[in-house]
Image 1 (cartoon, rainbow, N blue to C red):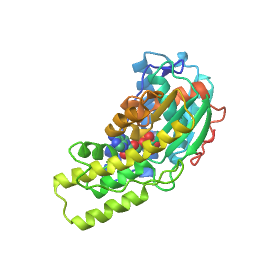
Image 2: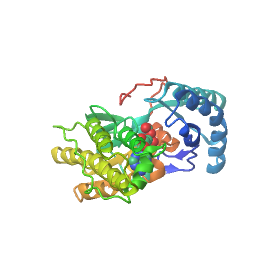
Image 3: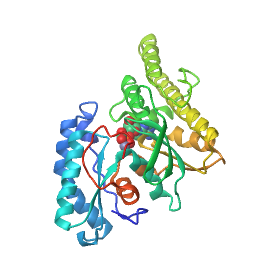
Length: 309
Ligand code: KG4
Ligand code: ZN
């Protein structure tokens, strides 16, 4: 429940981590079914925590894509039902836009134009946002997304699901200089993480049975390579076309090293906004904010939407 696109009244999250943990990753069918079972109760809870009644609601926003088709269908289906029952308009929202709008919830006077870096489980995108609802992708990954790379590296290091946060924790005890890994560097604003992933795989094969400290050192080196390669492009984009506002968002923006280094790299060239941790990873408040500022009339599901409206 969000007021005026800026103020979070409630942001209820049901984590499916337990549901998928035994499988080592998200099982789409289970995810969709769990959405269906949980969503009505979560809506009630969100209303209760916000202290508002259904009759106070003026707009419903639902994610159109990109995402898992089954989950998107459940979300828009429930939203359509509520919109009809409560007689309020329904708007369709792009998931990736939502990550940028999470920053608007954190900083009340943040407005476009801005430069954004959205790093999630499936995307590592550099975007320029000249105005609300207007996004121009200027850099993306050639292969894996940053979050996907973290998750795969975590699995190689014997960490459970979800991998990103576990790798973050392990890396805090490591020294990246003891097990240096290559730093991906493509020309322009493109990212690539598959070579780094292979380098970690080969290193682990060479080592055989890494002890605890070596695993932590490898986690730190891997994290450093991903973070520095992300920030190298952010820095380049900022140099090419200076902007007063920079947003780094998406699940990977919860990463400890990325948060510290992004602030150093941006420095005083722009104001950097990284949403608080609970607004970095997927949540409903960011979708409500995006719906308020930039929602589209149709809530038609498109699982492979990309950044298109
Ligand atoms: O945006 P998000 O919650 O879901 C998608 O839209 O994909 O991002 C999830 C991704 C996962 O790959 C997860 O491992 C990663 O964000 N992640 C992290 C951290 N917290 C979440 N990666 C590195 N360090 C973290 N602290
Ligand atoms: Zn996301």
